[in-house]
Length: 112
Image (cartoon, rainbow, N blue to C red):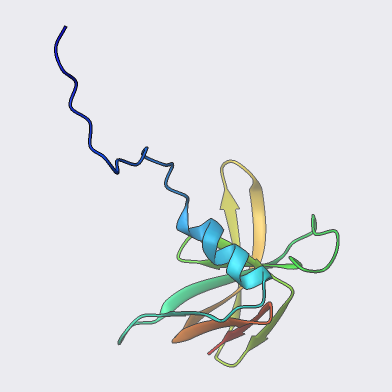
């Protein structure tokens, strides 16, 4: 039998959580979450969430393909509508914009 060498303060590897889950939790807790790129706009899709049951996740805010939920939205930039067909879910209608920043605060998305 050989000696097994173990590190004293070794920690078991833990599952890395999806950062979107953490961001979504922060939004629902009312924390400030700022999404902004230097010298670049962010494509944002907005869609009503018809599966929301209590009003806290009434709106879907899709930022560069990443889905987040919020209770209210204030948009202060040019917007337009967009209809898209997705293979897996069919036709979806969005309000879209190119935002300089998206700030979530008190579960409200402020899009500029």
